[in-house]
Image (tube, rainbow over all chains, first blue to last red; front, side, top):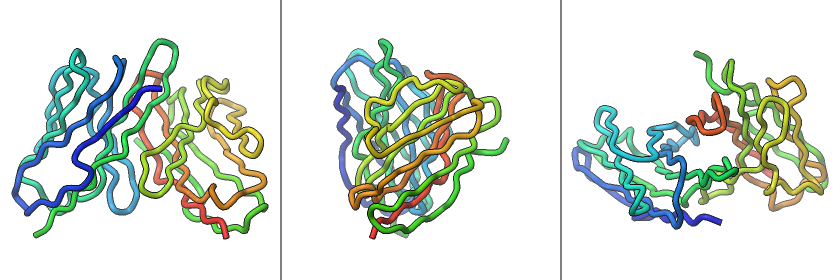
Length: 110
Length: 113
């Protein structure tokens, strides 16, 4: 099956700092989503981004499908950004299953 | 709009007992998913429904897990009998269609003693 690798696995930031999270995938995909799982376990959909760039407030994401990677940018981080960020891909070609990476655990300290 | 609703929020049972989880998707969402998330890992798809039909259940341990979505809306996931390795959070998600963004419920945290 398709492999999804996220880096770094852990990240500690001072409040106000910027960061970039990376997601590499092993095969072409139809769909890519970024999620944030907060410390209470809620999984929130951040971006649906099979290709191109999208921005939502302090967050933005870029997917370069031809090179099989996606980046999530967090600017001016806040303590509420803490949690685990997951990248998930859908292979397509008859399979709509979302395959998740292992996540990047982000801790933003005041 | 109301989000994906799941119940119960927490469940503790002994191994070999049975348990059931319930999910009500976002209104109008045709596609429903059940995921298992073991501590420290990303969610893993167990089963996907399109309306009341199964699209993908390739990773569902069918000897002990079952799921249904009889009227194409609510869904239940059952485990019988439970094993220690079933301790996890069970997440339900829904989307308007199979290739649309998925929206998750708060999950059911299952502990097996």
